Length: 178
Image (cartoon, rainbow, N blue to C red; front, side):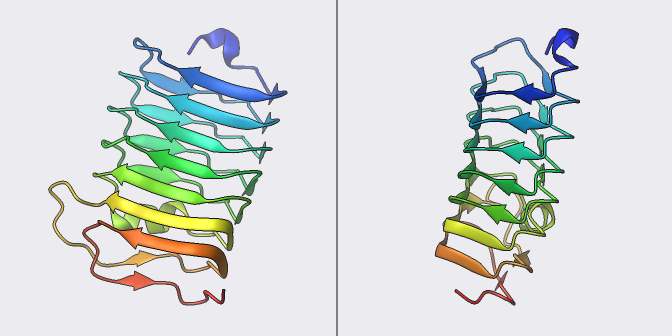
């Protein structure tokens, strides 16, 4: 994106980045707060999406339909005010939501063929609560063979658990209570 956007720290309502065919990287290095939600959709050439300082989002985070995107990084976000959906971005191999503890909605990882079980486990290692549904569907499929080790080591509570259509051998939810 434009260097003119590098100093933005707050978006009052929604951050929408949609249908930009020429953008190759999305980074808002100073953004700390988004009032109601984030949508990053249909970016034909973007290979990465990064919000390194984001600590607050009041609604859903939706990243989808980004065919060349390999990395999604929102490492400082402790909670999401709504669902987090990462889908139909088949080239993604790395996700970093390392500070994420609470999702006040669903956490959905769907149709992400190159995203390995280890990348999911590492990228969401601190998640404790998913208020609605944790869904992992159609991941780890393309050219990677069967994988063991999908683990949500700190997940204690989720409304629903939906794991399907993925090349996974073992699942681990050692502290899941409800």
